[in-house]
Image 1 (cartoon, rainbow, N blue to C red):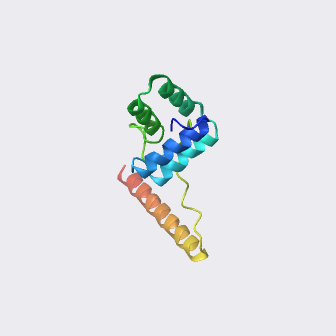
Image 2 (tube, helix red, strand yellow; image 1 turned 90 degrees about the vertical axis):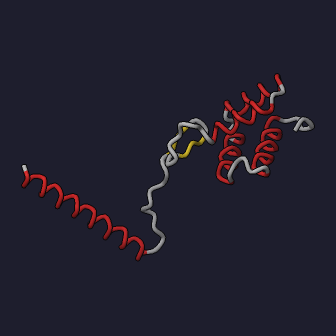
Image 3 (cartoon, rainbow, N blue to C red; image 1 turned 45 degrees about the vertical axis):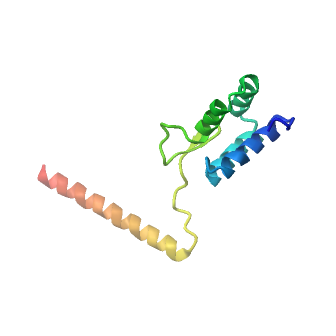
Length: 123
């Protein structure tokens, strides 16, 4: 990494090394690459700090922290500094799949209505 001149090249190389060593998944690699290409300030600050002090372990932990925060909800995807909820499963690819999804929703709604009525009758 020290032979590379441009910060973008250094970061992309580092991300490739993290992926090769198994420290990050393919999805995490993609997220980090998007941060680099999108000029995310945090990751470039981490690189600058690493170049100043040479502590690769600290640099690695900080970069990993961008895609593997300890307090992150596993159902929320972090991209840069923004959080995105996972996509809804409404985009079913076949008409039959859409029909099944609609049927499931109606059944679920029916169960909720039935429970509401039962609760009202008990009161």
